[in-house]
Length: 250
Image (cartoon, rainbow, N blue to C red; front, side, top):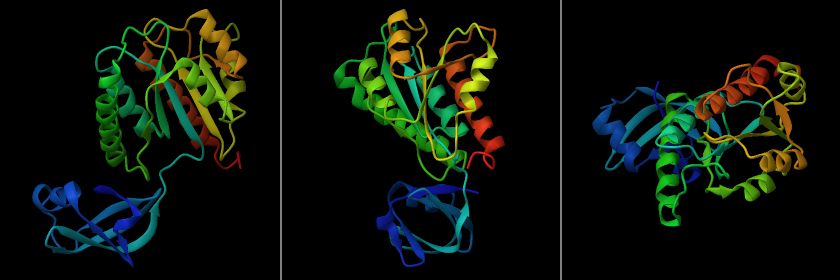
């Protein structure tokens, strides 16, 4: 079933008036007929709708069941990702959106090979946000995760301090015990930050600064993971924990 994201201005009574690129997709790409069903997500909620009619440049979708499904995690996961090389960020965004991440913060760290010029940052964010939207549609999310503006490490830590819990995938002498202990602190309604280093890893100073900000170390296993694998694994761990324990973490 197809999923379209709209803003509240498109809702009129028990219908959504869909225009723009989504209208073109409905009419000219999918060639939908009246009576066909699809999802419309608005302000974090997804309604089941049927195509009532095509009127000019507007597709009118009638709501048949409100709050049809809720695919969001009971916690908000913020991924702070050290800027990786080539198109790895696109893979990270796509997969972490599928896993349920709430927002992604591209972060400039000391060992980042990529140094984005200011004039290129805006176009990169637009591209990454488009990937997040496509992944949200594919995975039937209720909302489109936001790709934040690129932050310095200092700015990222300052933002992370406002969250309820900060997790740092890093070398851990206690192994998975640290991970289990850290995940046990996650409760429904919390905001959780995950800080993942770039290809070159963290500098010691960055690790110390993260600990000073209140970060708890977690292990992702005995193997050395690439930055994209580490991001997906860490978000996946949090997703699994919250999904498996959502009833116990009220």
